[in-house]
Length: 281
Ligand SMILES: Nc1ncnc2c1ncn2[C@@H]1O[C@H](COP(=O)(O)OP(=O)(O)OP(=O)(O)O)[C@@H](O)[C@H]1O
Image (tube, rainbow, N blue to C red; front, side, top):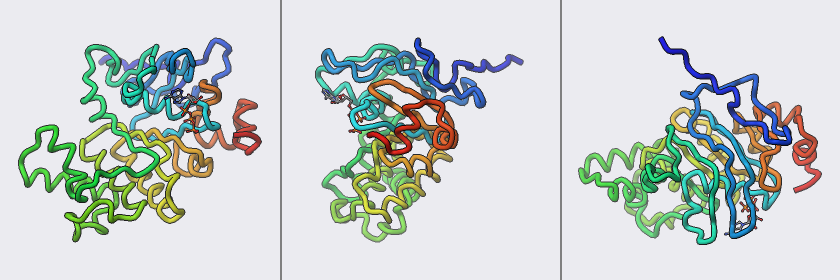
């Protein structure tokens, strides 16, 4: 039997200056990695927004990306499912590997990439359509025609997003009639309906009240059973509560990556410590 390759460089690789902490305590095998970036640079025109970031994300884990405003968290997250393609002067170097394929290579189909690596944004952005149609939209546009099948996808996705009980009797009402927190869970259901493997969440609770935020956090804990989750958050308590691993970004670089508990209780890097103690950002 072939032995599995252990990726010692694993969760993060040390950069030239050797500043990046590694998760040596918990190396991942190739099979345990949902996706990874290798030497990723992202430019807006001449501006280098992401510099040499190499990170591997565990399957069925929650990874939080934290760091001060403007450090590149969203740019990095968006590059993971090619959302930066939409930005005219944005250019990428390095690789983003998903299932062994670079998502920017000619072998990758951008629609498939976005289907399998779903994204939910900071502000809930449901379509101005019914709750049902919001969830059915993706599968329908990807060729699912059978009404029973679509009904099942809608129900399953809304259940997984912990919204079914609240909307099952008003599926044909406008999604815009829902509260902000419900709209955000609807957006999560919409992403889930495409049957993704990875969910990218860009500050999904930052526009919500504390009760709705709590629901989203609880939901993330449930979702990681089925999905690999990468979340950008400004809220350090939130990162500490919901994530397994945390990457601290600073000025476009990953300064430290480790198990969340270690990052928050025993950061190895001075800048990480300053940031989590609230001294800047
Ligand atoms: N479309 C764009 N064109 C040019 N520069 C951009 C663009 N988007 C982001 N930037 C710049 O890239 C850098 C990283 O921005 P990004 O939004 O990724 O940071 P962030 O850490 O997510 O910030 P925040 O926490 O405030 O959302 C910033 O200097 C920002 O001004």
